[in-house]
Image (cartoon, rainbow, N blue to C red; front, side, top):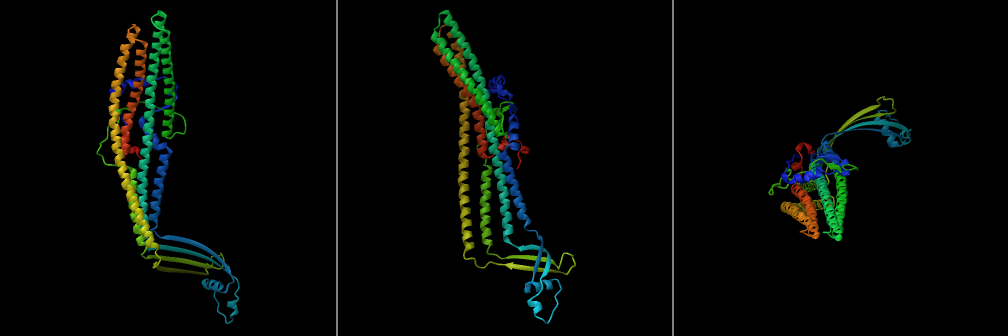
Length: 450
């Protein structure tokens, strides 16, 4: 995603670039690279793509049932059973009629090697059509769910990227706060030596400095954890991944509030409802007969010498019609219709929840805009207050309590600004996600695999 740099983020980018912590050893990626890697490397995305491939194979499997089946079978029989022995000799064209019944009642053991080639072709079977339509809907639902899972993975990666960005900003502010508190400690010590300040003031300033050091340690560890989460989000097994540049607000404009829902999970539910309707029609079609054609070519041999004792062929057409099943089909039809109604209600509920999620995301995004403006205004006021109070304290016109309060407030406002910047991007991404258009907003079409 190409992003323009707004002036409001230059100071955060500067502090981020000035950071010299050990976490810079991590590999750096841009937001585009992180999102692309997620779609290529994350196991959950690969598993979803495999589900789509499995559904496509299932559709091909059902389509192939329209074609004829050719089966080769081999069978060996050796028996002295009167009937079996008689038919073996008859099939091999070696039957010799005698006047003595003992030759038939007590025949010798005979062997038969049967080679049969059978061709089967369904002529009318409603299940073929319905099974194929259901497999097609299953494939479409799997494709829609795959897109939604891609959005899940992309949203997680974006949030992890923003967490790293926020971690850098907080680390920069923490380093600046530590530098300022070091100056404050030096000022307090100078005043104590000059006899114009109290020892208690020096100790209080050292406490503030130690707190700044603690915040710096927390910021470094938080950034390291965020980098590990980013590596996990894009599919890496371990290690850390850092960001090459901050993601900026202008790169993700606020989406159209009236845009239609394009969520893959809702599409999959619609396909599931259609599949349930087809299943009900298929149960009704169970009352119809099935018609098929079968042809075979067979060879019977006494041994494996391929002496061609006999060969024959046959062609047959058959109809199978279940006339009474003790109410099994009617019960199955009632169950199929009930499942269809359940899915329709489930789809209606999910659509209601989706529209609510969009409204909530839009409200949170609007709130994030207001919070960002307030954070920027508060930072400007806190910095101005610090700039006014610091020289007054150095001149003995303000107490240390006043300066410590101003410095503490400045540290708080800086952290809030760092959170507000990334929160605005996160809430806007949530709007796209709720609408089902996050992939299109962040990545070109060529990067989105179906």
